[in-house]
Length: 317
Image 1 (tube, helix red, strand yellow):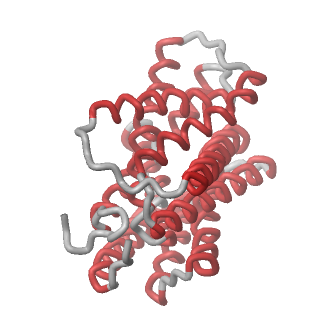
Image 2: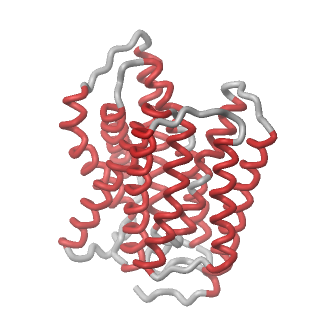
């Protein structure tokens, strides 16, 4: 354990930053995998989001059974725990379902840039007025550089089709993501927050919320390639869901909300790298410039946050 561990959760801020970086990289594969699901079958956004949560919940429960026994964290009042789970689950349902619907409506590039471009702005405003967090001049410049790099990365080299419905869905996804991030940070500062329990119960709530809508849309899709579809859905449930969200809720509880939002901009960087390496797309100069600009902003904020955590006084539990 490093000396800059968060006094409430016991997780070092540096390790929380690593968790969030891994989360951003894993989330970067979800949109591409969802696009392949839509090409392989007639599964819709609600059905995909439900199966993502249901299978992800099973994997999380299996992972909890394999963990070594540890001393449980203070549980806190029951009403607070229930409110935390319900709010996080609803935010998660809006975030991922609206994003998948935006990908289906207006394409992966536009859906990603709108969701992750609006997300940092909403989170920075919420953290400033609700949590009293300040980035400072350097942090503001880093956020601006990250959002600028995202714009260059997405719009610099291709003519994307922008559909108003898809843009609105992406903005709705960004709002759900902002609420989820701010609440996770708020409850993480207050103590009694168990990231593992929060993740499991949030996925249970999300699955229950999505079930009636997924049943109406159709849970069992038609496909000519069932093995490929199964592999894609299991991958989405395992890597960018069960693994990534477990890391996300743990890291977001100890890292400032605005910093979390910028680190999550690694998602489109990962998508760009996958497009070049796996799909054979050409890496243009604008794509490379946008990727490097975003990586520099994320690295700068991560180093600044890790150093600042050591200087700040710990919050008493």
